[in-house]
Length: 544
Image (cartoon, rainbow, N blue to C red):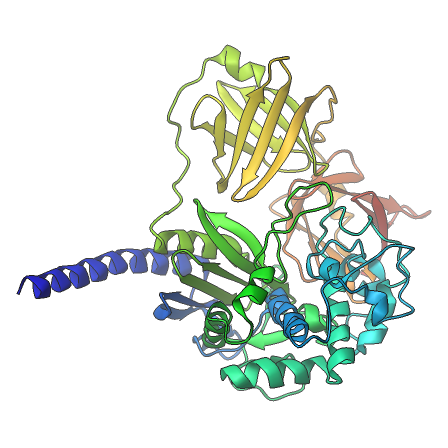
């Protein structure tokens, strides 16, 4: 009787707790994915059992079709998990080594006298330029390419750094891995993953992406203009082994279960994918092979996100709690990473809290923290003290209130995942550590007075002159509109952002460190623009 009562109380407690956080999850998802907009599917498992599975919003706006958990989405870069696992399967078979140079399989690949290995490709430490950031690629993304034709886009580019010296996310590396899989297996990448992963695991709703095939329950992809529009066409041969797989939450649950229970790979092999690798200088990259290494309030996570025209996704696995959260959406203006992280924290009962001030700091001490801090990743943050409140502003970014947790640590009011910790060493030198979950970046106080450009007021009549569509490359445009007195810009396949005037022709952006300048022709009509970002200049001509 006592045993039965204990079991009964445990079940009641579990149901009660689950209902509380299921209700909170419903609220988060309903808020992010309204019923009349593109939506999402979500699945949560715990201890190998599905505890929550729902869909929100619409899979097709034109026909008013609701999303279901069975709908199939493009999963973007979550594809990299399948590519990495395929490479490790070939490693177990003795057909390839992680330390092999890529020239063993692609003899004519220009490595600039450097040793680029399979390991470097898997960890984004090869130095090979990411082709999806190249203007050359913007001109051809509609075309069907063979893997070699795709490789030819970036193979002649100089290395951005010596292999192993830095981490820089590169789709190019995973394209090369897909090509290696084809050469070694004598199968196409699509056939390899179908034969060796999808069929053995019963992933009947997963496939190498296609626009031509008739796919039941295919979700339509959307991008946000002034309103939602059908996503820009992208040949699915272009993302290839870096991002072309389509799937649904049910199949991705099967995939995660298979990986974590060692159905496809031995435990010692898959652990290589979950290792937080280091650069040659000893610093961690927070990336394994196809999986990001992170944490949620002290609980380790293995995860990855995906973004592709019209779709975005994020999957998180917490090994200590055996919890898996996968969110797939059919709009690319969304960032489900933050949503899935919040939801995972709720399920493991370590929820993030809204930042609230717990202590009051005297103004003299607060003012001593102000100044410009230059960080190791090249960014600069300006710390100011205004009306008794500390603020942080990344150059080109939004100003955010800092909430004191203790005398040295501050939370960002607008981001529950980020913190700043100030340190003053014995020499009086000021240092600050930026942390966002597992990621930490060191910054040092500088005399550099670099500041966010000052916004000026521009007459509406002048802003009207810039309205139009400017083509930077075939199929890639910037659309400028005037909304509520603000000049807005939207790049093809991206979210709309506001431009702030620095003077009558030059504008800056708060969300990224970028500027845009408009130029007039001899007749005085503005028919050209130039984007300045990351040391590069890209010009566009006015189409209309």
